[in-house]
Image 1 (tube, rainbow, N blue to C red):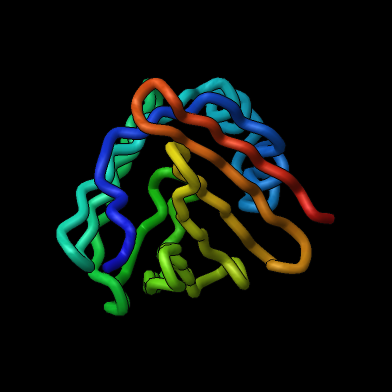
Image 2: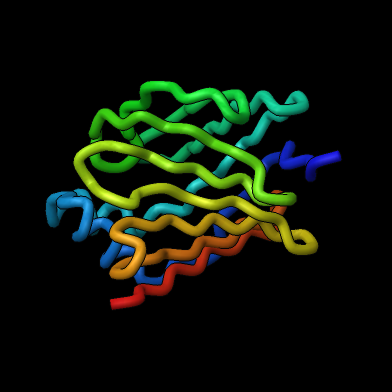
Length: 147
């Protein structure tokens, strides 16, 4: 049985997110605002069907998907690009691949203890960011840039 990701998750820290946003081509003002936000994620899971809602005081974003089924997504929460997205299980990790203008783009979610991690990647050999969230009251986000 795969891991249950359901819950409300709060972010507690954010490191090196700026590098990821620069690589996405996000403008200066939006990057400065985004770096100050403390997103909350609400994940609803029913087997292999997911709805992930991300709430901030600046923008909210919702994505729904079923494991293994490709869908068209507009990445409104970040750079507003149209991508073809598919999410699959890799053991207990959710691994997303997004095909579009930016190459080798995607993310991976996994849970360790009470923390939900989100690693965002693009140009896999150039840039990786890592975020960690914990259940309400325990969220952490970490980003590290590999250049």
